[in-house]
Length: 200
Image (cartoon, rainbow, N blue to C red):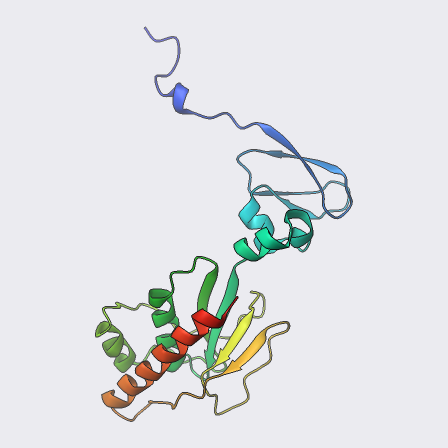
């Protein structure tokens, strides 16, 4: 009865798009539904969408212009402490709630990550209407970071190549009771407000 599928009208057939490789200048063909492809001449990764290009391509600023690049480029901010179980977890959770800027991404890390987030952290975050499910993580060398915020490491926090470093020196609440955690959260909240305002 039907000469074609009733839903066929809603299916978009991928088309071939021709892009120019920013590294060697060779034309590269990519399907419209693909995120990226490799240049057959030099192997450089060519991105199909503007957001991915701006975020990952080293030629993005040159290609799209400084104004658009600064508007679209995401900045990754990492909160770092020793175990990534207290202060840095609070900072990541608060920053994700408080910031409305789509170009800022927040993560947290530890030099010697613990096995779990301190229960007191979850409690004080619940007081802020945040149901947090973060897990302690180690330093992620492979993921680019633009700004490193040290919460006040008792050991030397490692330098992350190319990242700006900020020292907050928030007192560690570990083992000092719930009020110490509330005090740390209050101090961190104030610092985050200033940080979000200051970052370009």
